[in-house]
Length: 156
Image (cartoon, rainbow, N blue to C red):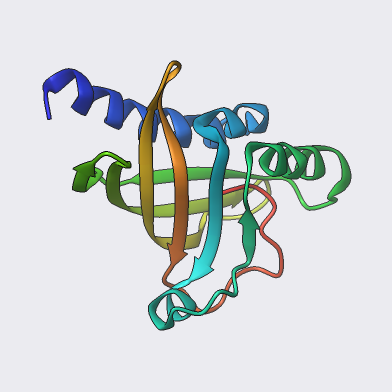
């Protein structure tokens, strides 16, 4: 992998986190291909090969629907998120794209409270070239913690 491709990969991860940290949810679907998949799943279910996930979307249209719901219809106490993302590790590169893994920590801060860890885990991604640059074709967010808040509003 040459430097330009490596830089594009790192930029994809950094820009994704920055958009979510800024709560620029309208940009979130644009990090995916039209048929891009996003899944938020517990480590236990992932390790056992069980399909149950907290969130599962199978297209950019479904991601846009989630953005509308998060921005317009879901009521929740306001909070800020901060993503700390590890350096993506390229597991393989082939005709179906890059297979990558990265560790993450998401910290949530409510205006009247101290920061708390919202989620810790890893992402397992398939990334492909598009005319717009690298995009996620598949993103499986596997969280390590068994306990999660009663609702996840914004994507991780």
